[in-house]
Image 1 (cartoon, rainbow, N blue to C red):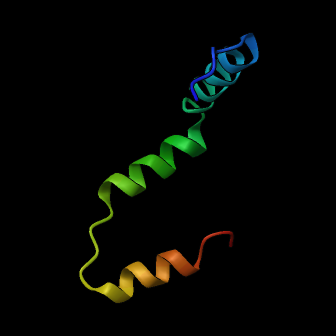
Image 2 (image 1 turned 135 degrees about the vertical axis):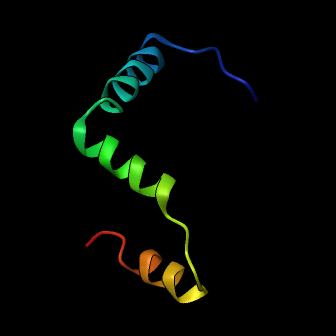
Amino acid sequence: MWQRPTASDAELILKLYDLRREAELRQARNWWLSFWPEKADDIVKIATAFGT
């Protein structure tokens, strides 16, 4: 069931919006936008490397 947004919900949205301007996140976003795998193995390498 839908719940009414709270002030803490608004704070979280503002924090996330602010984080997207950080240089490291911009770099990561640009990498994802330019990522075009040539084969399935490329996707598997990326997927298994998360957290490294």
